[in-house]
Image (cartoon, rainbow, N blue to C red; front, side, top):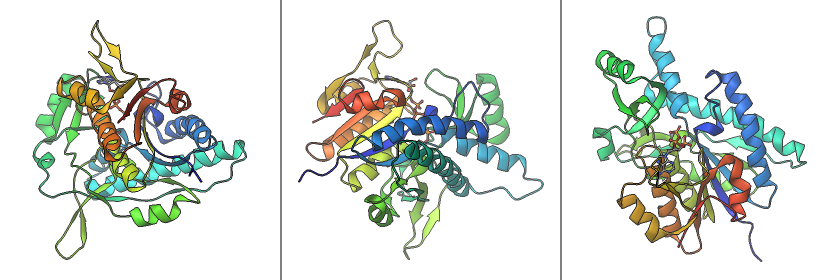
Length: 315
Ligand SMILES: Nc1ncnc2c1ncn2[C@@H]1O[C@H](COP(=O)(O)OP(=O)(O)O)[C@@H](O)[C@H]1O
Ligand SMILES: NC(=O)OP(=O)(O)O
């Protein structure tokens, strides 16, 4: 008997935030409710799903709030801010998705697993921060913050300047056994914000570190571990492109692993935004015959699953 296809869905920034609205918790819940309609549709279309989400803007804001309040309450360590972002975003997805499923008479529990992700303490990423977090700044503001607070700041894919932090490679999902146990009965929100980065001490204990793992790589890790059929990365654009934002921009539809690797090598995808998505997609498509990766927008997610749009990478 054929099993129900398994899809690990990675939700990008626009699934959690509407840039035209203030960055409040209330606004996030409204966006998540809309996002949940699309996710519920996938769940109701004979797919088993798990949801991974980003946390760059949210963890950045939690850190800023914690730093700003340092004179009245001790600041939260970075890893704790990551855990807080998982809880807060997961809580909203639980509310939004339960509601969207109920509207479709699909009664399925939605549960967030606070997920730790083991990273290598010697990962070179700790010496080279690349992951944008928090709000966007003008170049002038960003450089002032860098001088005042010691932040590393970089320009983010033509959209403005942001603080960047280390983004090590996710090696092992600590809670994977629990996620597997939940899979058959539950929609699990896991590896939020890429998972809380932890290093493993010699005695087996875990220690949180200051970094933000890329959620696309974390979703890829989860998709492999769950023996998923599809890794679906939902973002702002319907397709990844070559010559992005140039007059000769070309949107990519169905491409082979080799084509994707060639485009990566030619530098078509911006680091910190589209590059990790394409790299994660290639890794998943390569990991086992028959597996495919899709990069598309939330709004086109069902069409992309039906093969009608999106950038689809398969072996
Ligand atoms: N080659 C490319 N093709 C398509 N989009 C690209 C490309 N390079 C950079 N981008 C940008 O990457 C963005 C997606 O990355 P980002 O916003 O960081 O992701 P997320 O949805 O995970 O928050 C797109 O909206 C687009 O502006
Ligand atoms: N952790 C992470 O990848 O977050 P964003 O998707 O918000 O960048």
